[in-house]
Figure 1 (cartoon, rainbow, N blue to C red):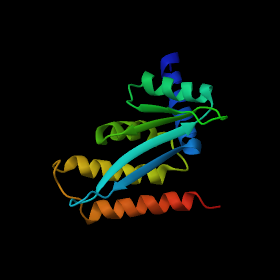
Figure 2: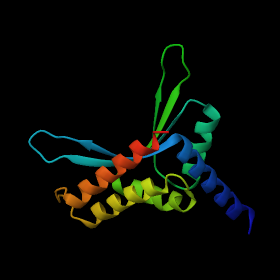
Figure 3: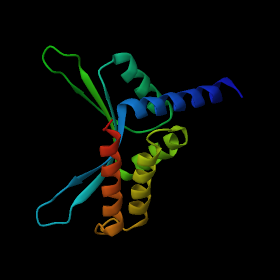
Amino acid sequence: MDNQQERLIADTNWLAAAWESEGSFTLSKQELKKRCPRIRPICSIVNTDPDFVDAVISILKRNNLAFYMFKRQSSGRRTRVDINIYGMKRVQRFLNFIIPCLRSKVERAKTLKSYVDYRLSQTKREYLGDFEMELYEKLKKLNAEGNCY
């Protein structure tokens, strides 16, 4: 194995560990007036450590994974950086990249991937059905269980 392959493996494993400790896999539901609800897949990670944030961004960029970054400054506190990946194709590409290295949040990531894969197989104007709502509820439950010790 050459250095480039070793670096890719190390980066992927580090990013997976970081996402498991600081990140989330979510389906965000928005109720729209006079229309069916919209469910948006989001992979996000939040941190205030500049070195940590730089490492995450560097790995995402090196692997051509699209993301959005938002900085929030609270008075007297360190700057909080949110790194979000949303959009069906972006989330699908990220999940394909990271799922093989996940350990503790693998079920959440696979549930999110099932939702994204299914929605991408449908026409863009297709209404949400029972399957999508089941995946939404399943991921919501997994995330709630993961927060209780």
